[in-house]
Structures are given as structure tokens and as C-alpha cells.
Length: 450
Image (tube, rainbow, N blue to C red; front, side, top):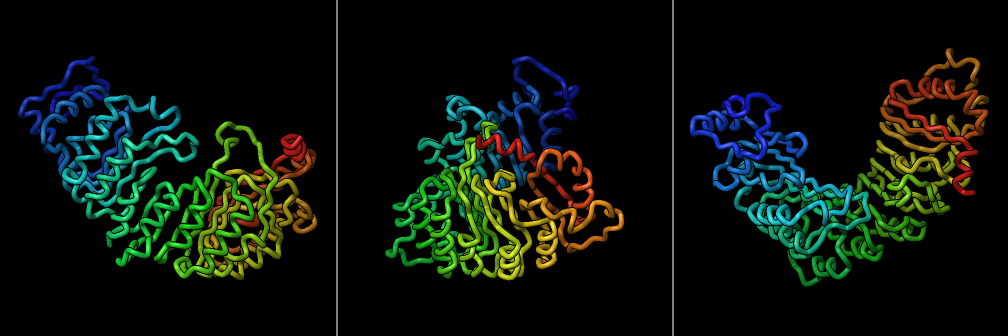
């Protein structure tokens, strides 16, 4: 628009006047617009003249950027999307903020615009491969309602080249349709209910569903839906992520892990991610429940020898010792990533039993390990390594580790006197890794449970 002479500078403001280009100006704009392959639209970054110009084009059938492949937009600009949707678009991402109540976020006209866009997607974007309707899953507010779920599912059921879909919810008919697409490889959505899963995977359906699907990412409301999923899922998958609204207690996890290692569909699982939502995380309050997950709960996963990525992010305590880590290293010879409670941190009701020397030995046992997040104890650190000769200490760990997060608790006087030397020690032991050390005072920690 600047090259066309409509905008003199990026800071040009024209009040509420519409920008109506001449034919020659429009020709110049279109010549430059043909070059665009990637476009990110955010309300705060787009000046009024641009919005006004797109609003005018929205009433025509013209495609402003016919070679656009990737379009990402926030919900407050959906009414401007029409002239940007073209036959070569492959990735569309619509981001809806849930920082406040969604029903206040989207006003009536935005909803109308969104419905119109969703209904038109099959005809305006026949080459669409990736559809991402992104909501903030960290919020307990469930902004997804039937008036929006239906047009989203309608669009999905009428697009033939979809490879990846990320939507807050989906109808059972749309899920069945995706299962029949040979191109479909990844889904992220709310886990369907037991009855919907039985409808989709019922024995009366003779054709093979999800033949090439590699990754599932489910948001869980009821754990009985998870049990139904693990029992009925028909095909091998490589990556599975479960985001739960309920606490991961050992009993639930035991049932899940037993199902995974006994079903052929999960035998080749390479990546498993488990995370749970905690109100304390969003409010800034640390209100942990003293639930302990032990190696006995995790052990059924040791039968899944192909696992490369294991991530558990819970508000519960994961209690492991060095022997448990040795058992992990032996069971998962291809392990590349092990993250234990990286978000929630060191909140174990009892001090962890893994020493820093034990962490070093575990890393040596995992030749492919690139990322590790774990709690450890500061006990025996001085005896094992010696704070007085840190400058002479040689690296003892594998050279493959790239990212390391270590968390520990100690008495206040220990942290005060040894903090800098502890950081120096960790960098000496893991010279190639980007290290993040979190040392928490015991006095502060105990006050949480007072």
C-alpha cells in the first residue's frame, strides 16, 4: 500500500475514512501482493488504513494474495480474512484469546464473520492441509460451544487434503471423516466421549480408520473416555499427548500404562506427554496435593522399547531413586528427552533421592539423551565432587546433552554459601548443555504446607 501511494508512512492514520484505491494503485498493490507466501495478522500491528482497505476488498471476489501459503490471524481480524483466502493456501491458524471470557471476546459481528469464513473454507481454500483453531488450553474456561463447533466440523468434512487439525472440539461425524483421509497425520482436540468413540470405532464399520495417523493430542475431561480410547484405537501411533483437567493419580495412570503396553496399537509409541491443569498455576498460588507417583506406576511403560520422548508434567510428586533411573535407561535405549514436572518444579513432600552424581551417571547411560529435567538432592555434593577443586574438575557427562533443568531444595544457609559454586559445578559437569538450575529454600517450601 505504501508503494501504491495510499500510505505515506507506516504510521499514517486516516481516522474512520475508508481507503478506496484507484485501479492503478490496486494494480501496484496486487503486483507486490503476489510475492507474499507467509502473513501474520495481529490487531495491534495493523494500522487502520490496511484494515480499511481489506474491509473494502471483503465485499468483492478478488483474492489479494493468490500465492499465500501460510496465514495466521487473531480473532479480532477475522472479518478481514475473505480477500486473503486463496486456492494455494495450505496452513490457516486462527488464534482466539481466552485471557478473558471468550463470549465477551467475540462480539456478535465477529461471530458472524467467523461463521461465514468457516463455511466458505472448502471452496476458497481447496488446498488447505493444516487447520489450526487455537484456544488457550491452560484455561478452565471452556469457550467452545455448539454454534461454532458445527461450522468448524462442516468445514473439516468438506476439505479433502487435510493433514493436521487443531480445534477445541469436533463432532463425531467430522472425526469419522478425518479417519478416512489417507493424508491425515495429526489431530489435537478434546477427547471424544465414550459414546462418540464407540460410534466412530464401532465394530459395524468395516473400513480402516486413521491409517496414516501419527500423532494424537487429547484434552481429557473424564478418565473413562481415556480407557475407551485405549481399548478401541485401531492403528499404530507414534506420538500421544494427554492434557487432563483432573489430577493424575497413580491408580488412573496404572490403568492407562497397563493398557498402552498390552495393546498392539501402542507398541511402537515413541513419544508420550502427560500434563495436567492446576488452578494454582494460573493464580500464582502453590497448592499442591501430596500425591506420589513411583516407579511402580511408570514401570509398565518399560515394555515400550521404542520410546524416545517421555514428559510428565503434574502437580503430584514423582518419586525416583538412582536405581529407578538405571532401570529407565535400560528399558528405553533410544531415550532422547526425559522431563519430569518441568512446569510445576520441585514440590515433592519428601526430598528427592537422586544425587547430582546419580544424574551424571544416568546421563552416561543414555547415549542419545539431549534434554533432561529432573529433581535431585544436594546431599553428598561436596563429598562427591569437592567444592574446593572445581577448577580442576573435568567433564564427566555425555556430550549429547543439550538442555538440562535441575531442581533441588536446601537449607537457606547452604544456598547462600554455595549457590555460585553449585552453578559452576553443574556447568563443569555438563559443558555443552544449556543449564537451568532452580534451588529452593526448605523454609520457603515448608511454609507452603504449613
